Image 1 (tube, rainbow over the protein chains, first blue to last red):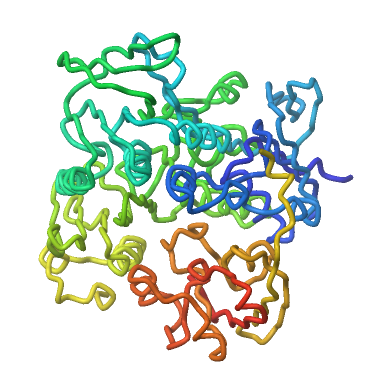
Image 2 (cartoon, rainbow over the protein chains, first blue to last red; image 1 turned 180 degrees about the vertical axis):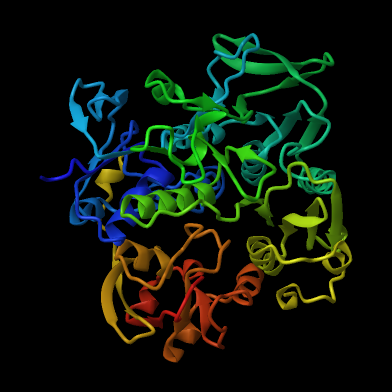
Length: 406
Length: 117
């Protein structure tokens, strides 16, 4: 009997990679890739970077041309929403009421932007970035705008701030914590990035919350902060984190926590259902416990792991997490997870704009953040993957060749 | 704005030779990178983990010597990434994502290394 094949819900980076890796592994059964966005699967990272400053066109973000899906017999359903999983009959129901049966189901349903809750949040000119359509909208709004307020000093907020400033706009970033990117990097890097943005003319307000967005004729005109200060704004760009899409799994009776709960093989408690990417709460050998990771690397590597499982080469997920952000001419590359690391040493001088920060957890190297030192980054990925012992003294000494440590 | 409605662009002919010697000749739109030309034509031997952001050094290629003078110069970040490639760096090593295809590069030949990771 012919298999019902694999249904992949979510056609982002993770969903696309499952389909692609399955075919590369010789999987012959049907594959359906179902996404609720209208366009071909595309890369999101350029949206807040190259695309925003006109270096890359939106068509160039497509992961593959349409012909790829046809030649690989991947049934790509765009603009389609899965509303329900029926685990008993192993099928999903679409908003169109169509039922599709599966042998294995992969939930790659991602996350959605956390929304502002302050007065004025509904005004025209308050924008969020996740999709290509939103990127195009923001780019069009940026052109005539003068004063840009960015809410959130994380990756997305700072990348958008850098892009808007590069386009010559007046830019102010609001961060409620006392430093930039507080969730992901050490204070050394937070300070470095504050200097970088300030030197480029970006204003930064730290330790203040947005109290209200004021408008004129339905359109944003200024922002009011918790300390009473008021700044003009033609456009408010919000990057205050994401919320994982867990509802589909929860409604099917699967465990959810900080995401859809999966084991080390990325399976939910239902053996035929996997969850990967932004939405997956998984045990990660490079974290101090379970984590949910929002990155291209995590999406791609988890997809490859699940594709391998489906074709019978079951393996545990154990890829080293890595991330990057481009702001102005500064390349920050992060390897490993620095959460819970008490001991930090620096290699190179921040003043030189080329340095790395090494994070140690329980005496072992857990993460490395590299600024304009890609060599350190790739060496760090190997050191962390292999669990090679390296002392803080070795890490801090630029004369020690990181590739030579065994 | 639909990604399905991508308009036809001018192209250049590129040849990718695998380390084992398999040769593929494909048409790549002007403006796409050498890496994109490989990915979109499913040419093995180029991984492009990061999707073209000069972050991973997995689109390493050896460029045919005859074309070296026609390439855009190597920027500092590419230079540093090239020092970290999985296969040995040679004088004609480049990252495919950092070479935009131009009319002048019509006929370009690149060889992919034995491994990218």
